[in-house]
Image: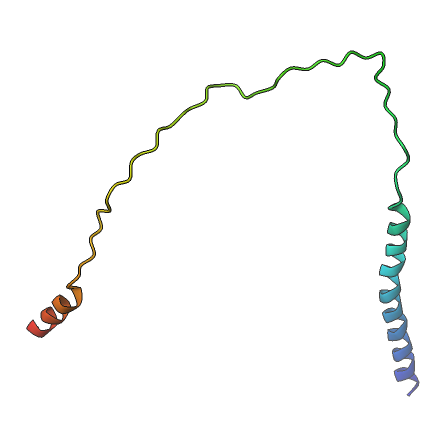
Amino acid sequence: MEKATSKFISQLFVFAALIAAPMALADGVQAQDGPPSETTYDFEDDLVTGDLVRPDGEQLIVRRRGRRASLIQIREHFIPEMLKSVEDL
């Protein structure tokens, strides 16, 4: 009976550790997520220049093709023709 009790207590400690570990990690993460300190950049003495950046090469203009009629034709009498071919066997 003592073995069963000690096994239960050890399992209880393991379970408590598994529950407590993520909570402790979450508390540490929340403490680090505070707002960052203010950062200031001073560009008074610097000359900032820039150019228009665009891709190299030529722009291709492709003409769209006209709509064509489908080359697939639906056979209107397919079922009667199929039945007729089976009757001939």
